[in-house]
Length: 141
Image (cartoon, rainbow, N blue to C red; front, side, top):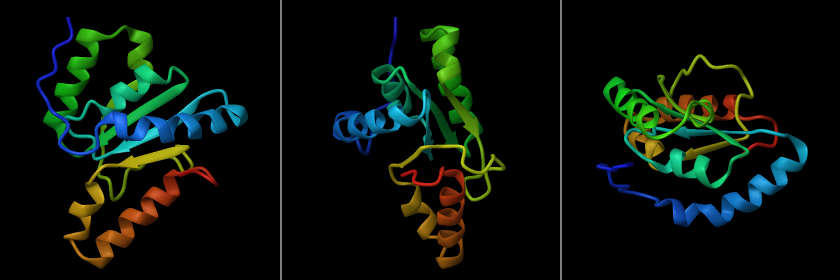
C-alpha cells in the first residue's frame, strides 16, 4: 500500500488542479499527449498527483539531488505499474542546463526553484529563465 513520508511544503496539488484542468483540456485538442516538467521536484508528490489526475499527461520531475531522484523513482516502482512509471518519472538534471531537447514540454511548473536560483544573482536567474523558455514548446506555459 502507498505510504507517503514527504509533505508538500509549498503548493499543494489542490491549488493548481483547476488551472491545469483548463490548460490540459486546451492542449489536448492540439496534441494527444501533454508533456509537463516539474522543475526542482525534489521529494514532492505533485508530479505523481498530476499524472494520477490527468492520464493524458507525461510528467518529468526534474531535480539535481541524486538521493531525491532515487527515492522518488523507488517509490514510483513500488506503488505504480510500468505504464504509469513511463508517464511519470524523476530525472537528475542541472536545472540551469538540462541537456534536454528544445521544446520538450508544453508546461513547466516551478514551486520554488526560481526563488533559490535568484539567490545566485542575475546571471543565474537569466540562465534559468532562458533554459525554461528553451524547454517550452512555442506557446507553452
